[in-house]
Image (cartoon, rainbow over all chains, first blue to last red; front, top):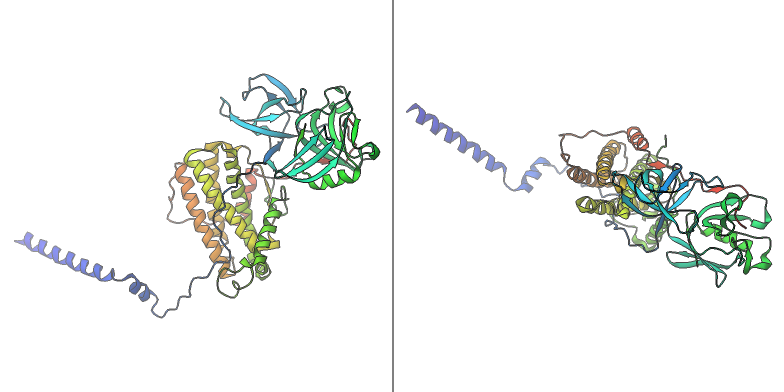
Amino acid sequence: MRRRATSALAIVLAAGLAAVALSRTGDPRERLAESDPRGALPPAAQPALAITAPRPLPAERHLTRWAPLRRSVVARARPAAGARRVTLLRRLTPEGTEHPVPVLGRAAGRDGRSWLRVRLPVLPNGTTGWIPRRAAGQYILIRHRLVIDRARLRLTLLRRGEPVFAARVGIGEDRWPTPAGEYLVRNRLHGYDSPMYGPVAFGTSARSPTLTDWPAGGFVGIHGTDRPDLIPGRVSHGCIRLRNADILRLAKLMPIGTPVTIR
Amino acid sequence: MTRLDPAALDRDGALEEARAKLTRTQLLGAGLTATGALLALPRRAWAAQLSKTDTDVLNYALSLEYLQAAFYTESERSKAITGKAGQAARTVGAVERAHVDAFLGLLGKKAIKRPRFDFQGVTEDKRAFLKTAVAFEDLAVAAYKGQAIRIESPAVVSAALGIHTVEARHAAWMRHLNGIQPAANAFDEPDSKQEVLKLVADTGFVVAAPRMKAKRKPGYTG
């Protein structure tokens, strides 16, 4: 009898609680109004920013990248620490600037480390090798390309595939040919006293296949001249010569790391 | 130790280009977005109306957005992060780039330049990528929270909160992908600007421009 009374009391209590709960779950707008009966809360502030839609990465056909070396490193034939050594890449170029390497690809080595395939500034031109990712620094993206047309004795700078500058050039004599291939602008020198190089000189990763004993490795440069009368022509030891006004204009437009196609 | 330096150089002029593009758009009359005294101004004029404190806070937020946008962009370009993590990187990256655009549009010429970043291969390794993504998103959430009370303009507070909640969603997403409980705490702690910048500097991800020019006689073949 007592147990039955307790159960009845519990049911009554539960029903009461449910009724109270239901009475509080009425129209949400009414409940919100009750929370601010005098309408004292200000409206929400509009944001100062014009938030645009998410911006996906555009597909860019003319993008290349390079990275400066963090340290001297051995380039290997495969992405593995025990693979055949191709060459030693020094952290600095012979000109004392940081050494940029064009990044052609990447792969995970068996050791789990990330490796980069890079084009090497060695003979034969066009040689590639692998270096550990950690040996290279920040990726730097380039949208330019410099094309040297040896047949037409013409240099063209492209940006996103469109020509932005062109000039006539002098290239290597037949006995010291300017080598065809894919290279990189490695550095920019200025403030020197050597009229034969003009006011500005760019270093490239191209190497003369004939002047192999040239001091500092026989790298091909792109520079001004004190003999503008010889341009256009096949007049140099392999370097690409421009009139001084043209090299100064090129220096304003072309970033370091620009890929160079000599054809 | 390298600091997240507002004066760091714009890497390849892309930022200047983006800014010029934004300015052109604004001149075409896309500057009005909402109501209110400040909001009625052409967007170009907003930077002049911002208080020094708000400008500082916005530039600080922009520096973090640069960091995040560069991180996800490099990851996407590397094509090394695939699957769900790759999808998340693409989605979040597109949002972070939109945040950068928005801050540049608001700050105009007062915007800091984009620092240079070297992510040291983290963007090309899935495990390292996710770990770093969680750290960045958690950091951004704490950083926005830390600055909220400093902001003077209600419109800027509203904008910052609008981004803060998105960063919190990113944090939860990246945590989930990394096998970490997305929301473990009842309350989150703010981080001060000093704490955040020290953490960023300690990563070594913010770097100086490489030295590629020299004043010396060439030794090229001539």
